[in-house]
Amino acid sequence: MTPEAGLIGLFASAFLSATLLPGASEALLFGLVKLYPQQCWPAFLLASLGNTLGGMSTYALARLLPERALKRLAPRMLGWLQKYGCVALVLSWLPAVGDALCIAAGWLRLPAWPSFGWIALGKTLRYGVVLVAAGLF
Image 1 (cartoon, rainbow, N blue to C red):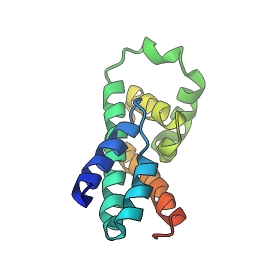
Image 2 (image 1 turned 120 degrees about the horizontal axis):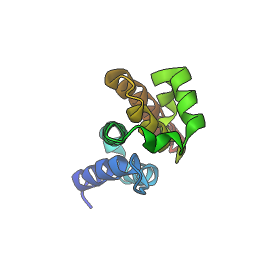
Image 3 (image 1 turned 180 degrees about the horizontal axis):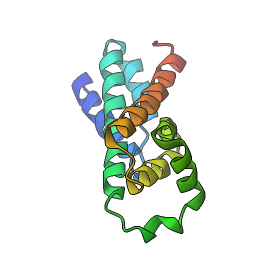
């Protein structure tokens, strides 16, 4: 595998990991930077960008859901998100809960740009923790 192919695969994995589809972007990031330490910063940035864009695609698709669709599924999460707003999206990196937060934020029509910023912050911090754990930051 070339470093470039690894970066492309990492971006794709990070994007898919932020949707309801399964992915293992943290393990891929860890492995890629262990194989190619010189790719640490590009890998970190591409993983963060891919995961953020994946979260925003979930957010955007949720804006298409009819009003009744989520009221029954996650009333507590909706109330929590209405209370804290976009800031709560910093937790979008959490497994399972993060996807639900992005869905709820889109369905509630929270403002797109602040949502993008908080999603990006949370997801970037997660990949930073992975690289710190790998001893590369």
